Image 1 (cartoon, rainbow, N blue to C red):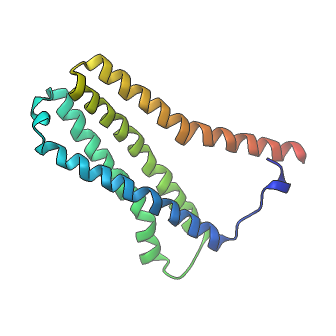
Image 2: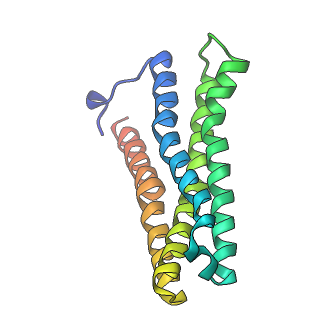
Length: 160
């Protein structure tokens, strides 16, 4: 991407954008966590094999970790840097949000595994569906953005 089509965002706007990104993701993760906690009260939950119950609990834990990481930037800003914007805060918040997406990615893939296992009672299909969703999320949420960032960096170095 050329420098003519890119513009540096002021730190205040960058901080606002980072916090808005977290605000957009958190409700979805919290809703998913709520639905997941209700699953234990479903009759089908009792029919899951031990591996499905274990996977369910791991997925629930990963979603809880994701929520904690995604909510940390707002708490940090509110407590440690209230009323201020700093490069340190922006970098920390961006890092925490990116870190929060990692357990979300794995937790969602585990959820797909558990749902397919409960629906079909076929561990091979469940593992395939969970693995495919993990690959899809990892590519769209990590590999693609990192590739675009690398391309953007190499484009700007070539122009110098």
